[in-house]
Image (cartoon, rainbow, N blue to C red; front, side, top):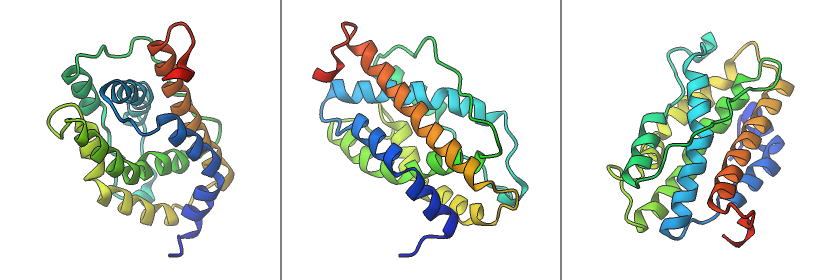
Length: 193
């Protein structure tokens, strides 16, 4: 299937960063690894969702808005008896008008959430306990489809800035998951998780 030009370009330009993050998240296969995943996701999405909630969207996106999962993430942390992350580093995107790159990463994660929701379900987490954010995201494929169609017609599109923002988003997520791993292994031996 041929992808639209902007989507294809962003996919290719972020491939290495995307693979690196997927490798770090891994195949959570037990309660502890899922808890680390959830804490990493909270460290990533809570600041990004807060940043997004205060931003206007480009006019060409019409009534489309990005999906925000902060409430579901907080409820999932509560379900598992996990502390909400303390000192979250605020999300600060690079210079330029690359919002489409950030949205591409966030909305594109819907596809991966479908796989992760199935893994969480095998561990006993559901859409009403422990994995709300994943199931909400997995069921929101229409938001991704609507965004990917609209992103092609945004007039003020800076391809270089979009790539920069997309890669910065992947890097911010990687750092969030890495800090979650470090917190789980205070002696710095996160390689043994």
